[in-house]
Length: 267
Image (cartoon, one colour):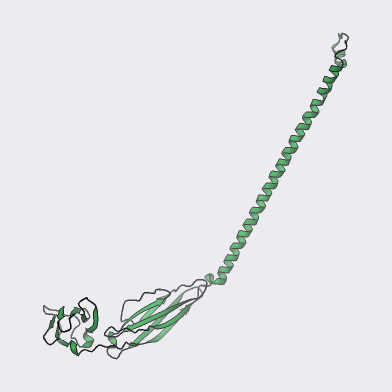
């Protein structure tokens, strides 16, 4: 790490070359690596980075020493031009699908230093980490009831970290599996409602049957109680009649009966 009093910036040695940052650690966009002429991307040795009074940077590595004049390095402000190389999408009725997209960027300086970041809106709205990978692949994208639309987006940055403002996009429409399409769900719902209605109807019939049985049992109980009362009244009538006969003859003087049978007949 070396400090440049002329630009008030700091040059750092990384695994990919040297990078300039400001005093707060934010990259300025200027960097150099093997594609820019460094003999080797990683600095080594006790004096890996040196800066002379003219602003010349000396980069020491196992391959030798490289001189780099940062003042002659012009900032590349033109973002790369992106385009799709190929787009492949396949799916079946079982819900299995695969999306594979290849892309590339045209840069007027070093295409090897172009970095890409991608995202699939509807699946993950977070940008991926910058990488040199020029292909993206997605499998088993989900959809429920109705088709679902995903939007693939890719951005590119040139060798000085200037990103394309408007991402390159491609939309893909994913169909749900046949058993979770809207018409299948409608059939399931109709069957479920019919099952619920049938169960409710059966339950109502059972309740009505129980109420009828209870009413019939009450009627039988009432009829049994009425029969008992009538029978009891019929048994009481002879006793009352006998009591009345005794009262009517109580004032008479009955002859003495030596024969008990005669008494019973009189009785």
